[in-house]
Image (cartoon, rainbow, N blue to C red; front, side, top):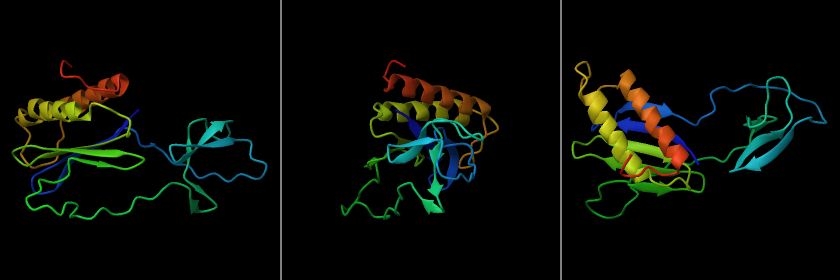
Length: 176
């Protein structure tokens, strides 16, 4: 189970923090001839190297394209008006077959968004923990200005620690 990304959005809708914790960090383009000495497998709608190693390509690396053709599923744009209800407060959770988007909006309008594996549990508790970390390490920082991008090392460190705990436990309990 994994937490893919964390976003913090200010009340005006601007992105003030982004952390991609599960995205592949580097891409490489390689050309191979047949027969391929790598074994590929489909896992969670991604083509991964299952066996073999060559030219820096290792087990677990994802194949993004073959002969210029994309091999991953595509996300289509989500309409801005998901709810036909009047007075809707916005998205709390959006579920697809590859991820779940969870959103927590504070009374001041700050939104915390987490993209996670659909099987990951305890995301609501994690969102409250992220809000607590934001309050403790961003808002109490005398050099931080409201509605501006968050550039605080203690915020980064504590957020990454909370994500590690949540991923290892599969849940983020109230006692954490």
